[in-house]
Amino acid sequence: MLLAAVLALGGCGDDNTGGGGSGTTPTELGGPEATATPTPLASAGVVLTLTNGGAATQQAMVSGTRLSGPADDRATSYGPIAQSVDGHGAATVGVPALAPGIWLHRIEVTATGQQQYRQALVVDDPATPNALAWTVFATVLSVNQAADTGDGDCDTTCTVRDAVTTANMAAAPVLIVFDHATLGTPSQVFSLDQRVFIQSAGLTIDGTDENGDPSPVVDFAQRTFPARITLRGTKKAQIGGPSGACPCTQDYGGTLFAGAPGVVFVGLHVNRTYPPQAEICCGDQTLIELGQGALNGRVDTCLLDGGGREITDAVTPMGRTGQATSKDCIKPERTGSTPAQPVVVTNSEISYCLDRGAKVADDFLLLSHNWIHNNLRCAMFAIVPQGSIEVDGNLIEENGMNCPAATRS
Image 1 (tube, rainbow, N blue to C red):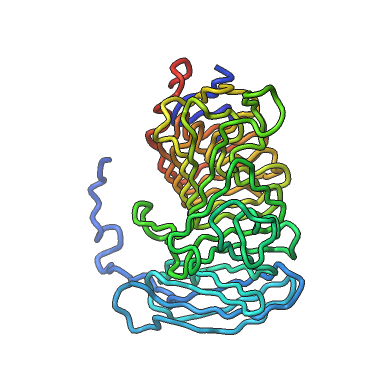
Image 2 (spheres, helix red, strand yellow):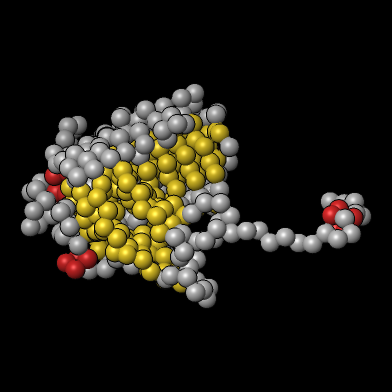
């Protein structure tokens, strides 16, 4: 379904704009000797596609283990299998005859220290094997510090902001992961007041741990998130304006802000904390924002929590709302995305943001198989004619509960 008009679904709008049967039996349909014919099934297997985004040839090791599934005499593990991938090239690895079920797949690249894990279903299919894609990264960085007090370099100590700052100058594509041995599980790290500005094309921030959690193949309520990024909303102006003023400016709030193409957030719990409600500024309180040039961005298997459980009104008290106000869970804006190259949010829980679960302006957003609930104004909002949202298989409920009375719907 393409939302091609001004949209405020599941809540309120922008406060600035105000069978019978035929009686035929199975025997008659198929003839007197018709019998059921079993559907032929291909042997369960997986085809792994490895894409090398860097210039140097890399040697990757792939493997997998079945975590659960029905009794079966086929293989319940594979690998490790070595596969060389040319710079800026791709390679495939076919693994046939696997027992169906939930599998944990792994990739390791010794030269860069890349280690990633993913749970996925392997099923018998009448025609095609199961598909799984891995990216081989040129640079791998590991967050090992919780506080947002770094020096801008991801070396022996590395905060989220350090990792992103280093990634912006490193050989792309870059993978950022979390050091659970140092930070523990779950790893909770912080971004305070100022946005974290991602300028590295193809950067991936992956919160998935060695068990493949959060698993994309279980219910939302059953997921565990080993990596949490807590964003703190600022309560006072950092620069400019009269003393004590709280001007609307896009540079506040600790937002994860992507300004490059192909940025991916996967397996992350991103949440926001606020000062007392009377002190909340109207500046940028969005969790994940994608700006100019950030087409092909992706949010996958994440938990986005806007922190609005204790907030009683979607209008922020200080400065109220204005053109620069942004308090959404996810907001693509003028990224250059199109239906052929959309920003994609998939398989994620999107909840408790002060405005909308998702908002687009001059952009194209695909929302697929998400749970969007309890956002204070509405589930999603597209500013037309240039903003479009395509939705597929989402569960949308209980949004718009704390809208300003004049705009409640």
